Image 1 (tube, rainbow, N blue to C red):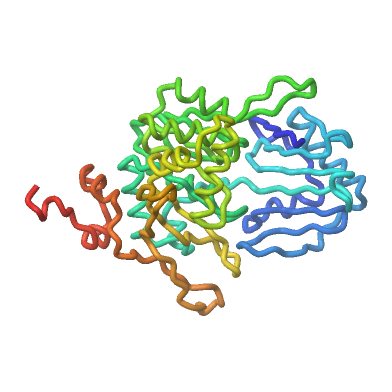
Image 2: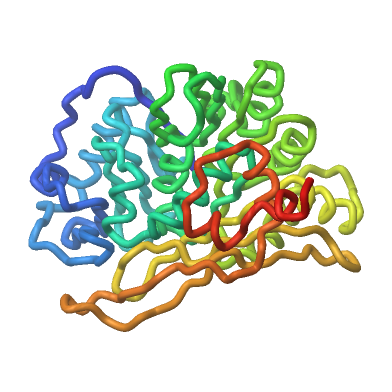
Length: 375
């Protein structure tokens, strides 16, 4: 079983050996070591094999031990898997034989020191200004949002940006397995899960934290990722007055995200019928935003769907924006657009009720039908 390790305070200055130059490169987002002689990096969504090498597996193992020791834990043949968060926020995963056949491995996802803003995501093509304007209005109208995507698609980055739309006056509780969220608001309570110690005690699960958060008078709850039975507690909180909550989930498309969410709810062991679970999901989640990594390595929003209810035990939903590939640009990267489908989202009535700053394109496409009818 992997341990999740955390550290706090200033950077302890861990000697990263031959990896230090790679960690200092701004464009490198991830460093991946397979044995002593293969070091890969991810840059702009693409993997590259570097010339960096360790002298031996022993040197690599020593680096892993230094990182683990700095956060007060250990890794050995009896516990050969380890998840860690370094003091600067970088996430680390390390494995040892016999779990990893070809020697020790080390994966470091670098912590983004500069918090990305919505303008940055628009600039790199993650989504359009109109799309983010719509999502901002949804956050302000206290819609419950689920961000879905595969590994490394940018779910946490998008969740950070969506969370930045939450008004300063609200109390936000964030819950994560390893703290990555960087909310800009002042009134934020950050909570992090903890594994059991070597004696098997002291474990704090995401579910424990979600249940506890409900007693902390939150205006909103932001769960970094739903991956277990805490999904049931999250849905119940969304259905009982904690509107405007957000979370992420691993799935390849919105329909798969709902199926996975249903499976996670079943892990809570409440023996609920499928129909009841689906009704809970349909009434709790308003919007699903799908993140995907395209073949050129770019990370894009590819679906924005609204849940509209259930029909014959099937959750119904409709596309609000449609992803279109427009070809390749002058640099050979995929050019794409996200355009409104023209189907009127049910949530528009709530957006109009809150007199929100809705993008002109969305307001013109979906005018307030009640005013038009004289209400």
